[in-house]
Amino acid sequence: MLAKDIMTENPVTSTELMSVAEALGLLYELDVRHLPVVRGRELVGIISDRDLRSFTGVDEDEAIEAVENARGENVGHFMNTSPVRVDPETNIREVVELMLLHRVGAIPVADLDTGDLLGIVSYVDLLRVLQETLEPSR
Image 1 (cartoon, helix red, strand yellow):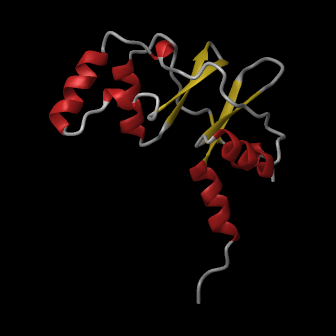
Image 2 (spheres, one colour):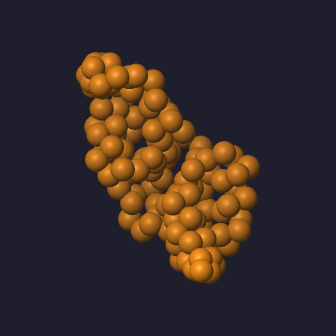
């Protein structure tokens, strides 16, 4: 099985100039933990809820205040500019190995010649594959 077989195609993305508040809103609204960052179609980074954790508070009032403070910051200041990436033909065994090695929850799938983002493989995608391969309990 290959990355292209399980990836989420055309994932929602961010740009470097998107505000942190907008990115946080997308993460929460879509219930995802990672946003690939693109310039046009080219993958230039990735931002995760972990990268933005400093903008979330312990309670709701603190979280609201942190997001208000984040309006002046943009994703480009916080994103990982060298994300691990794979091409669509990468075996999912290698994808899992890379996720474990780099301790990441998602890996963008890109055309390695052009840099264009094609999809993303997250731990949720991998768990779905595992679930499908497990025999039903009796």
